[in-house]
Length: 188
Image 1 (tube, rainbow, N blue to C red):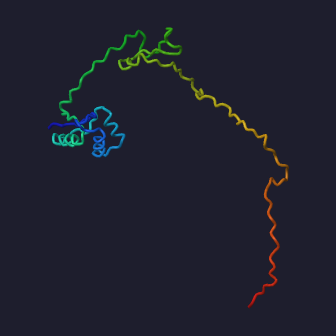
Image 2: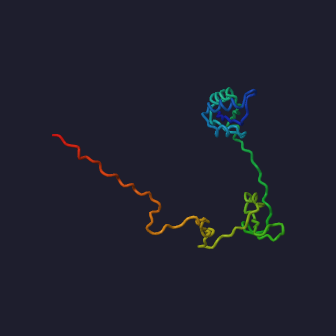
Image 3: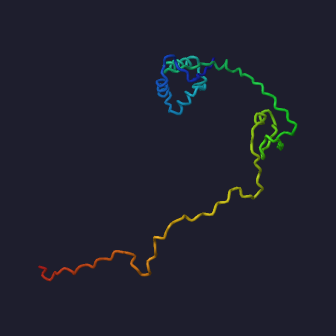
């Protein structure tokens, strides 16, 4: 039984408006802006895989009604993988993975040229990298903290009050004389 996958490459059905297709797909997939941006990035995105023929046709028709042009691919036919032949690594006389000091005038001082150890590392043979050394055991690698500087404040307008002064506190107003209640009597 053949299995299919549905892929989308940000192509629209002729006559469809981009904003309406985005709105339709957002509603269909319940997708947020980030997922919509990924769908419409132009890359080939597999939406659904391992479908039977009826399911694949249902997905294709639904997405086409939403305005998206999708690709239905038979997974059995897709099994063929294209082989890529790697370029041979550059010929280097130095032993593999060793640092070779370069004394040419065009190379900056303090730079290393590293011989590649295999084909994968040959891609990085022309990378210009600084010669970072390794600190001895126990060295402090952090920069020294600068001494804190006192802020420059002008305090010449202030002075100290003499000992025992009231520092401008508001004095309590003495309470007035108690009310005269001699004319009041209690009745039983």
